[in-house]
Length: 258
Image (cartoon, rainbow, N blue to C red; front, side, top):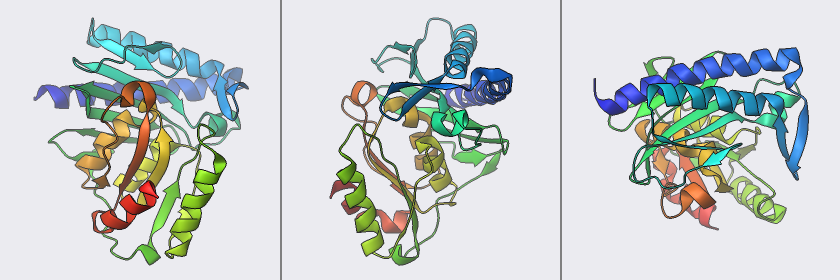
């Protein structure tokens, strides 16, 4: 088996276990949220789940660098670097919702090259490695064939790292073209649901590396149009991100850059 495929499979197995762990911790009271910043939530389960993922990666890939949302770490992606978000969609998680996931990506040469994203309910595992395609529960997935943006459903992500007017403008621009706007509280899920054709695109003017390191690989391998998210100082600073139906590439790029 190719090394990237082996690493993808390891990430998928760990992500599935981590999602089960997070759900159990929530049921035991570990889902009570506190604030790291404005609309930036954390629970006890976030930390415990990240520690679990780190321990598993250290066992399977000793000595390799790890960057996690809650515990930080290396931002040099020259050699193998695991980039993880133990619970993406913490605000949903803390309120008992199911729109959250575990994300584990692999970066080599400053480029995201493999990763997996696991949901607990419904039980789903999205996975990809560069050159091997993208899958959902083991079956191949691909971007939507949509050619008319007036028929498109586009998720617009937001955060308070940028002025809220930036999000409002993007949403207004999408609707002005006839597109439908969604926002679901988990960037990672919005990205991979675009990869699976459930959405036609996901756009966000700024997202952190741990939210999207796995998802950008899955989107590329599913045939999505993608912007240059994993470029420059993206590991430390994040970047704008856009993925979507390839036939809508020019319009999506314009929406992201407006």
